[in-house]
Image (tube, rainbow, N blue to C red; front, side):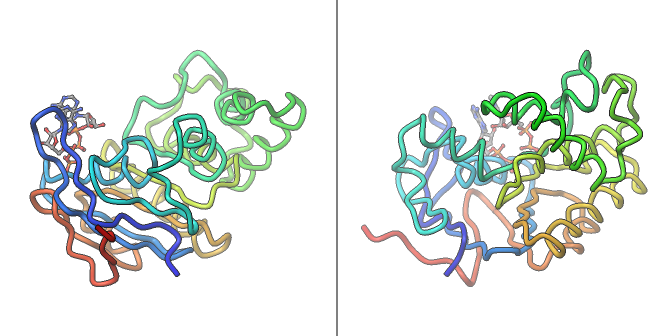
Length: 227
Ligand code: ADP
Ligand code: ADP
């Protein structure tokens, strides 16, 4: 069955409806692009799938479990251990070194310093960034910073990486490198990648794309919530 699913999810922000009966199914190891106009509900959908937002109605399933029914503590633990996040920008701590930033999710999760930095080093090596470990992230180019953000998303060995406009602030070459990295993770390590993007070239790297319009998703693989 699918690794991750939204089933008939409604979600409003205050009085603004953002998702209306949105259903989506994501297979393990799949690279899925979520496209659609600005304000259509893409980020809200991503946040519901990732357990950052809870649906007003409907269901979110992860790995055979109802994610939306977990309490806050269990949900944030799941986010920390099973999910990785890459956003458009502003996600690294500029005063810290690259290695500090990458080790941070492990340190926050209670991993011992030595092990956290060893695994940060492995993630940086995996992304060919090992020569940048001691640099302050404030000194990096946009493309380098985004690759470091991917290393940080990866360091906990997540099942799913959620990326919201990961190439939105990059020139096209850096954007291609970022997508190559995400595709490589999916192909070589079976990581599931869900990427929100406006960029057709980014979507072209995905296995499949769905379009969100007015809070609705058209996904032929989706199932409905049982009401
Ligand atoms: P997209 O990612 O496709 O641009 P969003 O999911 O960010 O769409 O937003 C969907 C709708 O919900 C938009 O009308 C947006 O303005 C609104 N919205 C999103 N987040 C909030 C929020 N925190 N508070 C109020 N309105 C929001
Ligand atoms: P995008 O269009 O790429 O989703 P946005 O600028 O619409 O980017 O949204 C970025 C973040 O701001 C999202 O996390 C969204 O939930 C939040 N957001 C969007 N619209 C509003 C709003 N009207 N009020 C508060 N937060 C919002």
